[in-house]
Length: 161
Picture (cartoon, rainbow, N blue to C red):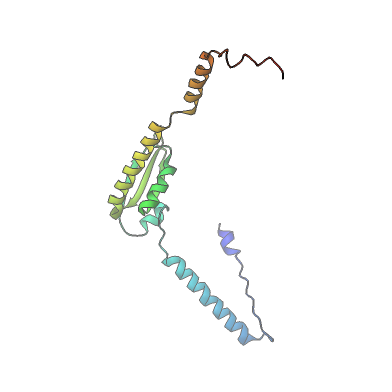
C-alpha cells in the first residue's frame, strides 16, 4: 500500500510554442491548485448510506447499534436506502452463530425503527407467501402419480390418418 502511494505519477500536458521556466512554473502552480481543490472536495463530501464504522464515527453525530442474527442482511440495504439511513454493518464472529451489528447515527433512530419494521414485514411476508419449490415439486409429482389416464382422450391414439 505504501509503495502505491509513493509510486503515483502525475501527467502534465502543456501546450506551448516554447517551453521555458516561466511557463513550466505556471503549469506546476496550476496543477498544485487543482490537486488542493480536489483534495478539499473529497474531504468535504460526507458519505451517505452504507459506509464503514470509521466513516460513521468520524461524522461526530453519536453512534448507536442494533444486533441482528439474520443471514440475509443484504436485503436490508434496499430498505435503509429508502429511508436515507447512514449505517455500517460489522460481523461479530465471537459466538457459534454469527451476528451482525448495525451501527447507525443516533439521530437516525426513528428512521431505523421504521426501516426495521418494514424489513421484518417484508421478510415474514416472503416466507409465508412463497412455499419452497421442492415442496411444490413433490406435490405435483404425487398428483401425477395418482392420476388415472382417461380412456376417452386416448381412443384414437393408435390410428393413423
